[in-house]
Image (cartoon, rainbow, N blue to C red):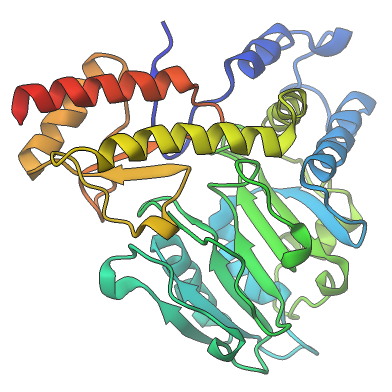
Length: 361
């Protein structure tokens, strides 16, 4: 029996996608080989690679003046790739960072090594339970880019709207919300996302970059980290994360069958609403995030004590509700309810929460 996996990543994948991958695991599409075995220069894999880009472009309505690449290294490697790819005339870049959680802070600390970086705004003063008010005046007029993390996996908050940067290129980490909610790609100059939340298994990272910014790499930027390298070679400069990209392609196909991102977002909002409504209706559990900024992907909550928090996670795991322990920086519990988490998982979690409260309240 499959468990309801509330892990922040790697997370649940659609069961239908897993079964499709299983069916072709040994012999993909009559090739007599697994995707894990075939050459990335072969016609079958080139078709998978092309499908991955075409399907993602369709699902996210990515305009033709943006490039799409599939790279390795996770979103964390992009923390360094971003400043190294966004210099101007070979100069060290200027980046303005909005610090709203652990990953945006990590991105900022990595970027500091490569140029003139500032923390333009932060919500650290309230343990990242809100998104700071921003306007074009929040940023330096001569900044090369503004960086945000659109959904904050650890703290359970998200941007309610795209900030106005006054025309400065906006770079966004969408790792934990890509395909889970609709975004207008035109609002961003660069989007990047690790796969292991809503796309597929860890190993592949999506980068979407406006063409006019794709050739601004600093001379010190390593060849493998240059977006232009992978753009030119259609993500096949070296051996790619072939299997992860293949599973991502199958996920894209399935999301399309479900009705696309808009349909998935509607389902996600309903799931999150069920859980937040229950939390808000009881005095036993608490969600600390200010309501306008609550994530629909990662729901954090606490019980009346740390001891009960630990007991909650342990007992939940015994009944098939796994990985509910909160991140060490926050404590409490965290239910990551990405696209593949079915409504039945939310219903089972709420039923357990009610029973736990009854026994310990």
